[in-house]
Image (tube, rainbow, N blue to C red):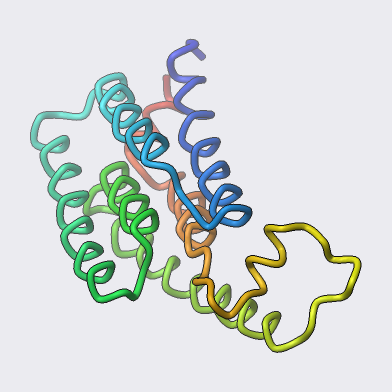
Amino acid sequence: MSMPFLAMLVFFPGAMAYAAASDLVSMTISNRLCLLLFAGFIVCATLAGLSPQQFAAHVAAGALVLTLCFGLFAAGWIGGGDAKLAAVTALWFGFDQLVPYLAYAAIFGGFLTFAIVTLRSSPLPDFAGWPWLRRLHSAKEGVPYGIALAFSALLVLPETPIWRAALAG
């Protein structure tokens, strides 16, 4: 397997793991990470040999999710980082894997929200002094939905043309 294809197999999963960890500990998903995922898609789509039509369909899927998530963000239902992460992930998946990705994200997001609400209904023990855990426990904070988005992305990734091309390369 060539080095560019090996990098493709590590890049997206690593970026998703970083997004989930970052959202957990800081309740943020950086713009830089989303831009890096955007640039990484362009490189990986080129290496994978996506046709111009396939590339355009991936861009359209990302734009659709960005538009929908912007509305959810404007309504205060999701965070801006979550909206950008969902959109850039849709860019990677295109329409072929968009429905499974969004379905998994909804299911895992529901479980995550339930778990956090349950956690918040109990007092934290005195020894739980990590600032990120105290922030996660606060009812004033949102839910780090990036965890559900990243987990869902990792489940769907093996079904994508980019992943299959990387494995074949």
